[in-house]
Image (cartoon, rainbow over all chains, first blue to last red; front, side, top):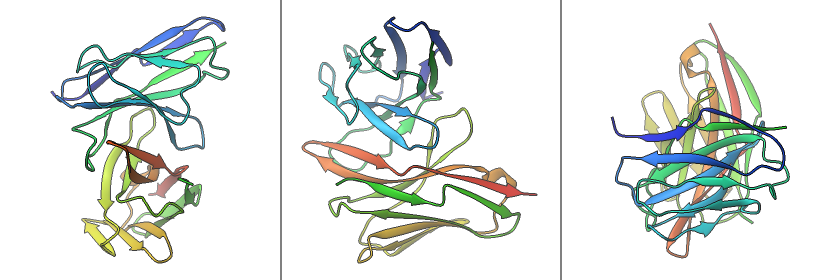
Length: 114
Length: 114
């Protein structure tokens, strides 16, 4: 089955610890995205990547970091600098970014930091 | 200003009724307007999308109405079913350099009563 895998589904961390969320896609998509979703709010873009070894900050990149060493993988690290990290994190991918392409979303990771 | 405003925040409809969700945007550079459907604990999935040069698009029970002069668009769900109960997000898509970015509305939680 083609799709996007995010793991784990639930993640718990203590305040002050960095944590890395996994995102893998086998859709052969060039572009990948990370969004954050908070209750009662829409999705907000954290980072996106158009190609391997390249990524751009989104609207709320502070306190987050990413890497794109492989086309299939786009991990997100939530650092201790992120002031309010508890949220639902969604990874997405699309065929490209030059024109409108549908973004396909993974099932998400719910991160709780206490 | 890239904001997309969505209303209502929540909506309760009887089975067989019409559900209507409205969105307004400010940035006239948006060139595609998708609607996403999200079930609890899942990632959003594209439901239907429209270009701004089209006034209406229909797919099955789902219709987008688009008013370019008013910078408003809406989703109509005809013959609403309990299985339609989900959160719906409108979005505006824009070209940002060589990339594209989605800006989401805050979401509408739809409940269809049996």
